[in-house]
Length: 87
Image (cartoon, rainbow, N blue to C red; front, side, top):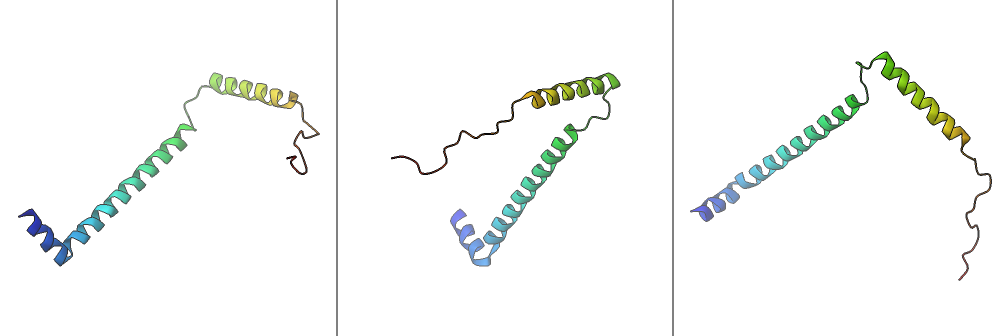
């Protein structure tokens, strides 16, 4: 009985329509999930309820990070080998 239904469905094109619909549904679901995840990641970067103390702490951390970056030596000569590689 199932085989007869499959044969009839393939002859009428209903099977290809069903496959096409399931593919479109799957793509729609995946696209929706991507949008939801991207929105969540973007909203996690912005917190409007931070207290002034937390903001001041963030600025202090940023200042320490910048001073650390400035103290790092800036190499003027590269240690990379330039030229042919010896055999």
